Image (cartoon, rainbow, N blue to C red; front, side, top):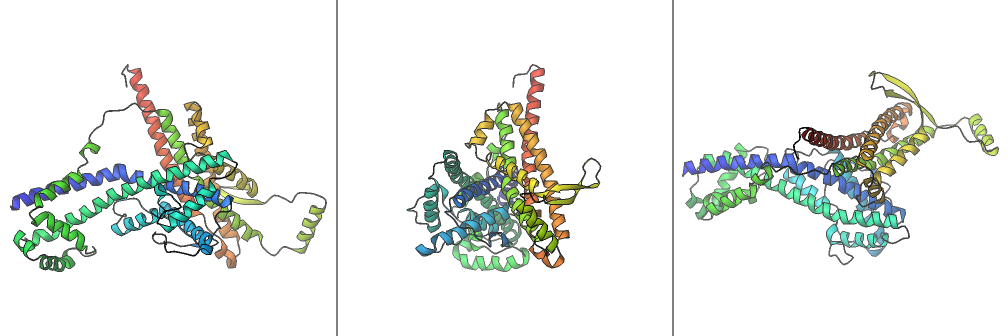
Amino acid sequence: MEEEKADFLAELGKAVNQYASHLDKNIIPSLRSDLRSMQSLFSTLMKILAKKSLVVEDPYQYDQKFSEVSGIPSDSFTEGEKVTVISIRMGQFESQMEYMNNYYQFSLDFLTLPRLKNITALVKFVKWDGMSPNSNDINTRVVAELLNKGKGGDDPMTTALFNDALKQMGTIQNKVLESIKKIFLYKREEYKLLIRSTILTSLKLAPEEYQGNQENVIRKIKREFSEHMKGHPFVPELITEVLDEEYTNSSDRLKKELLLKLNVGQSLAPKKKEIRDHKQAILEALRLLSLAHTNLDGALRKLKESSSVLEDRAIPMGEKVRTWLFSLIGRKREPLIYYVDILDPSTGAMRQERLNFEDFMTSTLQKSRVLSGLTIKSSTGFVKISQKPEEDILEFYERSFIELSKIIERLNSLDVYFKSEVPKERRPLIKGVKTEIGAIKSCLAVASKAKHEYVAAKEEEDQLKRLGIQH
């Protein structure tokens, strides 16, 4: 009997470790990418709704501070409060998604059971695949009403973009929840494995003891728990599951079912190499790069506010008169120039750059708009670039990557400039853009990985062709 228990414990430990490897390699990267896509698609919907004045902007949305994400309230409200309340809730969802994607570490250690529950509650803010004005869920019902109004209009491009974003939200939400479900399974079984290896091995319970007095056995485990598992929560539901799997008449069946749930042999087994569509691969790298537009917009908004704080100073009377005279004769005011320090990557030294702030903001906003049109595969921008030759798509990707890298340098320099140039008493009004810069860098890193995989696959295929080997 003891030997059988030891064998099962070893087999279970191996299965749990294999399942963890599967999550690290496949599920967690997919979850992170899907959550970023969900944030980007939701921002697209919000922009369209705001443009049509269907939602009102929450003035405090960007001032919110988070330490963890949580579910969005779902209590009822009056008809008169509807637009204001749902606008605030949608803003809270957008802000928390941004916080999670920028600050959360997507790893098995970080994704604890409480965090997974909070992420699930947040993602379920609206039932995207059950979007209906007749939904029992109040948030889903009211958001559905807004979206139905948002679909209207004479602009077919906006309508197509809107409908596709809405459709993708349902698909991605289901993928996210399925990924979280798999991580939940691992966290539960990891916890139960710890109970088995630390507590049950020392207690040496008999099946008759558990079957005769379950409550007494659980009390015994609770006493041992405080000594052997400090820092871990006591979860009665999972303790009971372990005991049922070990000491009931259904033990053998439950153990087989458990190992079957953790079996990822098919996922981990080497797969027959498939012919890869290289054009689709570089398009996907470009789409991943385009997800940077959300944080790019956020950074531009904050820099514009910081510039206003800096320029809103006591203006000398002579300057006021000069500005007034220039306006009378139709002369344009002088451009807003900031002298910022830029790191020269070729030398590693800092150099000063004369930066026309308004030109930089305009060109960067234009780049952001181009990128935002590539996040959805059915959008006009994505379809148009998909029709180009593969070499042209790769060239556009490389050019966009370089442009974004240069934009990051200037975002960082402007962030430092405003924080140092604004008078000390006004510095609390300056909103830094380090968070947005970090998020944009993450998008570049993910896109770069996808591009390198594309290049590696192309090189491998070319090499096989040179050797006369059919792929």
